Image 1 (cartoon, rainbow, N blue to C red):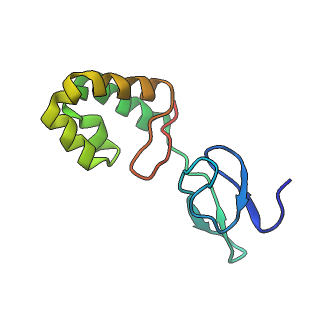
Image 2: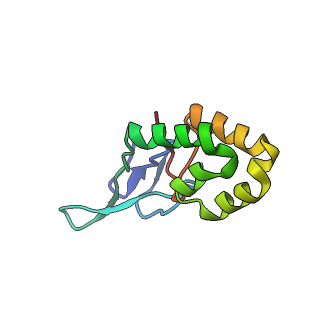
Image 3: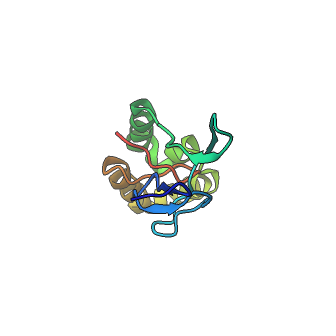
Length: 114
């Protein structure tokens, strides 16, 4: 049961300190939002099905060029995928599996959901 100075992690659901920026259990950065009571509290960031679907389609058709990583804001690893052609296809396949199983994250650590 959470108290007034605690919140739930947006990723794993564990009770954590209300001021925590990163969950100590799973390591996911917690979004901070300003609410009506002038307290900072965590509010989950909603991603639409479109963002997941677009990422999936980019990975399927242009995955070896890393286009899906550029789309979600992971520019550095996108460039590495472009140079190595998706790690000779291995990195591309791993990303595809992560996207399909809802484990792929954007540059802010938020999981893309189907």
